[in-house]
Image (cartoon, rainbow, N blue to C red; front, top):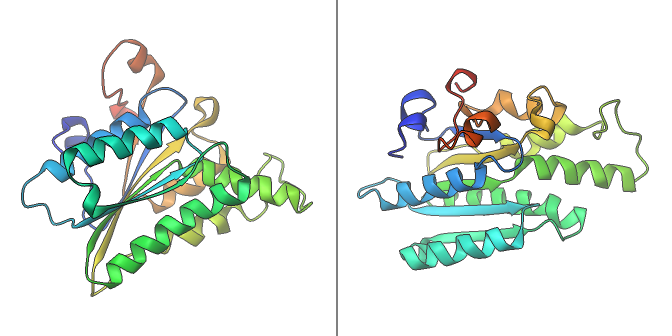
Amino acid sequence: TGIKAVDFFAPLTHNGKIGLLGGAGVGKTILLTEIMHNVFANEGTREELAVFGGVGERTREGLELYSELKEQGVMKKSVMVMGTMGESASVRYLAAKSAVTLAENFRDQGADVLLFIDNIFRYAQAGSELSSLSEIMSTEDGYQPNLNEDIASIHERMLSNSLGTITAIETIYVPSDDLSDAAVTAVLPYLNSSITLSREIYQACFFPAVDLLSSS
C-alpha cells in the first residue's frame, strides 16, 4: 500500500482480510480510501476489480469516494453498493451481503477482487435492529442472539478459489473505543491483520493514527 504503518506492522495479505478498527472520527474511512488509491495506483497490481460496500455510513462519504474514483479513472473497474445511515435496517443489512455477492460473482468469472466494506459494525447493528423489530429478545450486551452467525454469514464467503481471489479490507467502528465490544470481538477471528486507530494519536495530529502496539 505504500503506507509504512500498514505494510510493516499489519500487512495486507493477498487473499486475506484486514480490519481497520477505531472509534468515531479517528480516520478509518480516510485510511480505507488511501489504501484503495495506493493499490490502484500501483502499476502491475494483481487486483482487477474493486467492490465497495457502504454500510450505514454518510451519503456524503459515498459521493466523495465515487467522485475520487471517477477522477482517478478507476471507476470503470469498480462497483459501489450503498446502504447509508438514512436507510432502513433491512437496506443496510443487505448492502453488506450484496457487496459480498458481487465479489463472489466477479471472483467466479476469474477476477482478482478487492472487497472494501465500510462499516462492518453497522451491518451488525442493522442485524440487531431487525432482531428487535422481529421481537427477538436481545442478549445482555444489546445485540441479536445470532450475532456470531450474522458475522460468519458474510466472512466465510470472502474466500478465494481456483478461478479467482477475494482480498477484503473492512472498517470496524469501535463503540466508546471499547475493543471488547461483542460486535468487534465477533469480527476479529476472521482477520489476518488488524490495524487499531487511536484517538490520542489522532488528537496529536499523527496520521494515520495507528496504535502499533494494538495492531497485529
